[in-house]
Image (tube, rainbow, N blue to C red; front, side, top):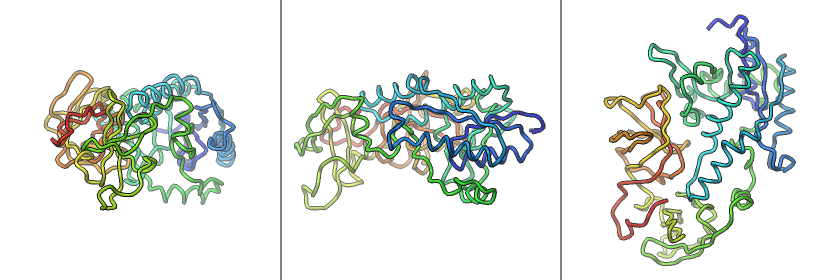
Length: 376
């Protein structure tokens, strides 16, 4: 791309990644404008929300590298498009990933629209991912730093969005990004990475959720039906959760920790299992819906595919056995741990992120005494 006179609006969060992104683009000759997105207002003066400090950091960076910056308030859009869905999913006993929805609805829709009104030719963010143009269109690639790759969160982007997007730090390791920031005198060169969801931040998650969702206590049972405690409400637990269950010690003397294994929404029962490798925590297949494909079409049947069902996970070989309108069934060569409805199943072909869908249910689970228990 020829940079001369092209205007790029950069989403500047106050963090080191977006700051270096803005500097790199300016060095390449683009006309750079910074845009700070304010997405949350409910408790902006709370100690857990850092938006004020983030804004000050973004302004300081803009001044240091010599670009203009403005703030835009997307709090209403965020509440309608992201937070409302977040609460609906938790109410249904699922565990959503608001970062995925935020990227699709706010950062690459509301923000993109606003940038276009500012006369932008492109937008840019500090995500660790890459865009490649080919004869077939635009491809979303993993970031070269495998420890920071964020393509999982971006898998719902479409051709129109990718065609207007730049990821300047996608080619760099995080260590190099911090080195550049320090070398050019950015005060946030050592700033801690964001936790991702501003409205939660470092606050106790259950206490936060309790402000918006009612508690509905019920029994906590093991696979053999024994009652071992009481839960505060199925919405407040996620599959694979270990901390915060309230079960200390060991029933069988093994010392193995307890994990949330299943939820029965009909009977309001939380099932727990002991040991990381309990059969209830392992599955080889899932069904997903609400699909989104980067290329605008599902993968070819002869492609070699891999997938991940949560962000911090290594890819695993998989096959798509049945494509449905808006959904697919996915099977894995090796059992997957704590596949969680509400999270995203994201599919790759090598370094290319193809898209994915929202996990509806775990299927083909091991047959056992309580296999008929509905899995939420």
